[in-house]
Image (cartoon, rainbow, N blue to C red):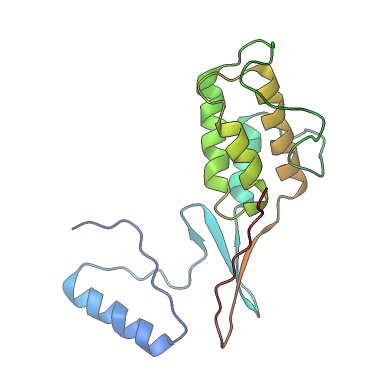
Length: 168
């Protein structure tokens, strides 16, 4: 068996160390110490827990799309533009569009604020138009403005699963 990357974590350090020792007896194992990056996600320890960020990934995505110098916006989607399949604008390079949307889908792991916009833009991957691309660029401009947002996983004595739903 070959495993490239594996994260073992827990709130009981002696137990985690025993697990790593047991795995080390069965497999060739290299402990890289405290987690800093994993699959493009930066892991930052805080007093309250850990903060997960993909700001480096956002920078790379902005660079690949020539959006580093773009003007920031404060919302991921425009409220005045309605996206539809046939919007009477010219078609856009589907390969490029899919590459960027795929990157945005991966980014939504730590950026739940873009989930709706990415889902909406994903609906047009088979036949993107310039309107769809312009909307994608707006989303990238939003990410440029909010580059250091992410997810905080808090330490807690009484963990609870919370769910929120928007019936619309």
